[in-house]
Image (cartoon, rainbow, N blue to C red; front, side, top):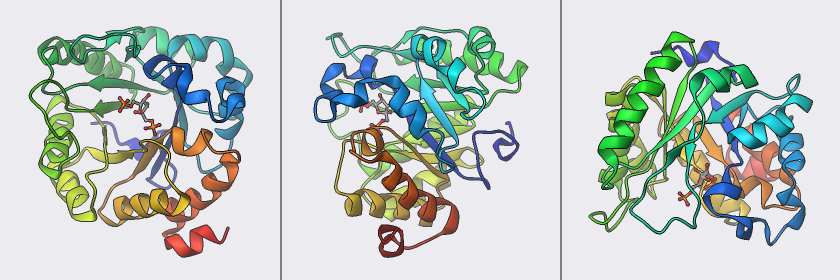
Length: 262
Ligand code: FBP
């Protein structure tokens, strides 16, 4: 395992990844409410906030925008991804190699694994190659560990999320990014099952400030290391404001009420 506390992926041992691969994963619909959010520069600007440890993007956005921000922003290259136009069983195309991610300037890499999907076997094999290449370059690996597929009726129940985080440990990820299981207890179980792999929460669709921050607080109280968040930041008119609140909860241990006062 890579001690991620020594990498730019963390601040004081905690993590706040700003995810911006939604143009691929969900398409332009995610930019409808705040049209200026379609401009990647806006999210790169938000990523200069001191609360943000890294920005997670796909190769094309990294190539086009990261050079203008490389002094102020740490890059996590997402190595696979699929559009919402794909109607088949959950799967994710490998779009970038570890070597090329490094060339573009990434200090860490991210990979989605859909445990339980018909394509789990191929995805796990692709992950093996990526994980071993990343080890060779001392680059932390973040697994977007999202069990889903025909057999899974509820992909956020605690036992499924605990399995997701365990799967990340077993396959050698440094960080497991999992959906919120709905409670602090559920997150505690996921953290326990992950062993030495660090667990962070996936932000999810946009919610009220309080509901979102309460889930983040529960994650931190459960022993999680932070979150990777997209829509709950850049779908807001003022991304900085919610980042101020996140900074207080994740790095200062503030309560939700205190964080909301910022
Ligand atoms: P959000 O915080 O907006 O949920 O982003 C996290 C993320 O994992 C993105 O990296 C990715 O594009 C998206 O969620 C995928 O969500 P899903 O597969 O559930 O549609």
